[in-house]
Image (cartoon, rainbow, N blue to C red):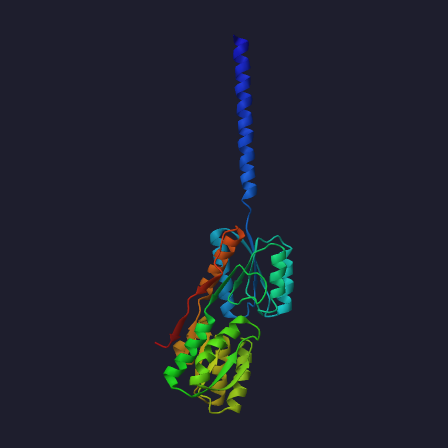
Length: 304
């Protein structure tokens, strides 16, 4: 009897060991399936408050969701952005989040990510070629229309205006200009337009030249606040009161509106846009279905 009990005890003990080992294997397997998500994020520049806020939104949401994000700054150089992304694609990233410098130039990088089966999410600006799972951006066409409409309402029709354009090839430049000209071409008199590449110092120089060549300009639409701030300095230097409308709603832009130096800005919410982009990137990395486009809200900010 004692022998039988001893045998039964051994059998039960062995069975428990087998079950225990099996359970451990299942846990290990589950851990293996729960792959840690790493987001590669290429931002066009960190020398512009708008994109600093965009990156802050991405990093804050990544921290909240417990995912790793690798941020690289293209410094407004399409070639550098291409090299940065090539490096990210070699670092086992789960998804590529990109704020393109140039919508044409970024296409090669998007196609490279497609070939590596890495989902691509675009922020603020689109890619003209390649498979982008989702674009998170403001309705730039609508924003351009809002700027033109505001000038018309405040100054009337047919007044002479100039336009400071953003980086040639960037979808935001193209779309903001498209929206602006939907109204401006028929209801305003556009006497000058030129790129200042979304840069404050270039905005100053280009606006100075515009005001010298066209002394009767009454208003300037700048496709971002940085160029608008440059235009403000140009107007001061020329001793002129120019009605200036910017775009983005950066902290400096809003301050300029509140002080009366800038007439208005079409405000984006870059931090929220960055958060939205990171959320979509995580969904795409998990293989979940995402919307092709998510629109971030816009609002007109004028002096109260």
